[in-house]
Length: 109
Image 1 (cartoon, helix red, strand yellow):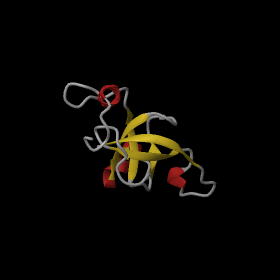
Image 2 (image 1 turned 135 degrees about the vertical axis):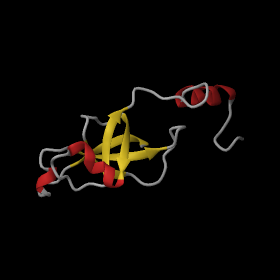
Image 3 (image 1 turned 120 degrees about the horizontal axis):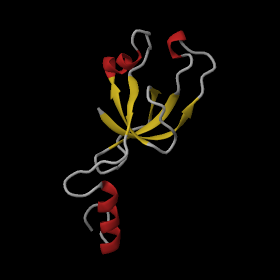
Image 4 (image 1 turned 45 degrees about the vertical axis):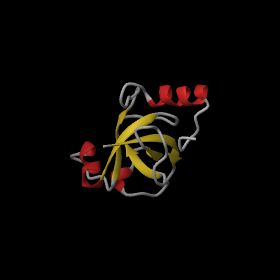
């Protein structure tokens, strides 16, 4: 599973029948420290996520599993909404706030 932030929606008026009625969301993959990783991608939503939420998603063949027995042609599916996460002893937000308050910058300067 991977972490991501939902940036927006994708509208497709013509699509495969397996995608009809399913939300397509534009997501930005994230590192555990909430930094953007790679390029945004389109994922099929299986949980009702919304713009601005942090989610976790799966890629590859497993992305179609949440929709069984319907055949959904996807290689990325949102499978959960994150309320929060931590790495080590602090959440990414707490580490960012600490870095700002001490004047630390990205790259350790």
